[in-house]
Length: 337
Length: 264
Ligand SMILES: Cc1cc2nc3c(=O)[nH]c(=O)nc-3n(C[C@H](O)[C@H](O)[C@H](O)COP(=O)(O)OP(=O)(O)OC[C@H]3O[C@@H](n4cnc5c(N)ncnc54)[C@H](O)[C@@H]3O)c2cc1C
Ligand code: SF4
Ligand code: SF4
Ligand code: FES
Image (cartoon, rainbow over all chains, first blue to last red; front, side, top):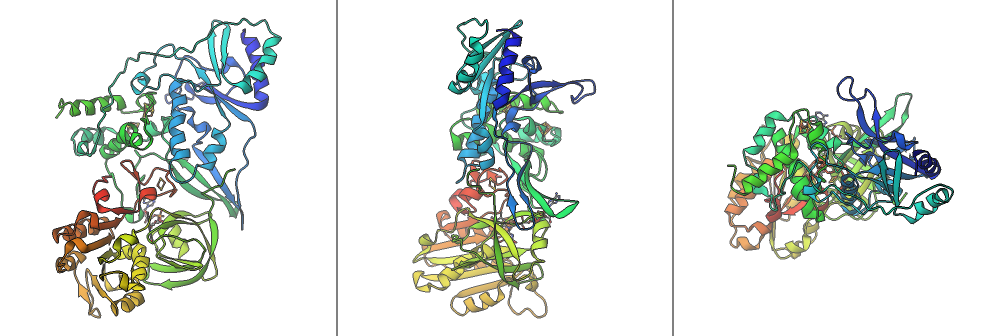
């Protein structure tokens, strides 16, 4: 169908859904004059950036960087109300797979599902964006997260034609009405997934405590600045800290929030009396790598990292996560001492 | 919204007892039924939230012993009887009381580490016939830091209680020196029958456990309790994680065979 026809469908969907996709914020990049490709609301298909990877992931849709959990009034707690609309998110296979990782923590870890995450997650539907080729630092084929069947809609754009595969009964009803009235062509559409990335690695089967004392980590102690950007850009990082605030104009009222936390930033483990475990960036790097490629899997049965490469893309010190894992594999093979 | 485990409920302060200048014991009206060694998340709206062990409990009440060290705990110390604070929980696991039956029990607690085990001591104090022997070894920095003085006095009438301070003063007539020194002096005819609980600051735990191991107490007979930064208590926020273990879920109480493998 044509762009115009597809935009009519979007207008229709917008009545029931919030639609988020990679968008380009001009001039908002890290360096002056550069753009920031990130997630934002869209109203037409031309708003969607298909040919670049977002700096931040789509996780904020279900796990906002700063989320009000409840408001306090003098004697009462009040939970914020949520938008009744569904949420459609344009996402690549790795990003869709990343939500499965967040589900593990938020819905399956511990005795209770997280109600804030759950109420947003239940509304979430994915619009699969295919990748023609891997982007810089992508290694999804190594983490086995380059494919997914979990999508409601597949959108492929070719010239000014839009192809779409509907994989969701609810959306089918909505969309087929518009389809009937249009000059649409039926084609056979199969999702295409990237099968090769420039960056490839073998994830060691065995990463254990014996690697903790290895001098490898010291390299990161001096290079890593502990800025936490690797965590904040990661679609699978799920940690948060609680924060209470009160309002200046009415100190009797306030709110409890949760905000993104980073295991790479000082203070993550700090307790009363200034006691802290993992004081060096080397130890923090080790903790992060072990979590992504070993600890999480021991608990949930699959690796946490989905190979999106964002952490490498954003690191100001050019620290590479896959390179680190590669070195661990070399150590396991007796290569690096 | 589904049931919200982050929403705390208000509990009334029944009484406050000043143990030291910076440690107060709060007795609260509450119907929660914790296990011995579990903790709750305590909060004050607009200030914040923090994990605190339940130091004792009974029908319709729980007790917490809170040290004033920062944002939340400072303000908690300003509260009065009849005021309220907010709690959610209990969380984590407790001490395996069944395992201690008919055993020779030694509880070694350093400083505020006595709080999470106080209810265990009381449990066996009320049921001394359940165990072969009960020993309590507690160490504090100075005589001013001694917690639960009344209880220590009461307990010492019925079983062996050692209270030692790192540094005494002119009025202190009790023991002086580190806990480890007193562990060395213990004499177990059958170390296999000894069950040990060690709770306190990390260094104290490390060296105290070593002394018990030297005496031949098997690793699996040692139980420890960990403290880590915690923001949720229910396995989500990530702060308390060590390897693939969440201290708020699988701990804070660990058998030493597990604890020795947990490297931060
Ligand atoms: C399972 C468990 C059980 C516990 N049981 C008890 C108990 O029974 N009794 C008890 O008293 N405590 C207990 N604690 C410890 C208690 O949770 C802490 O003392 C409490 O969190 C302190 O909270 P706060 O808001 O008062 O202090 P905070 O204001 O959070 O800070 C405490 C200290 O942390 C440091 N700090 C915090 N933030 C910063 C920062 N941004 N920059 C620099 N330094 C900082 C400072 O040194 C400060 O003094 C327990 C902890 C755990 C995990
Ligand atoms: S660890 Fe890095 S590569 Fe892996 S999912 Fe997170 S941001 Fe992507
Ligand atoms: S982005 Fe790079 S420098 Fe910043 S915390 Fe992560 S590894 Fe360290
Ligand atoms: S305290 Fe949040 S995960 Fe354990």
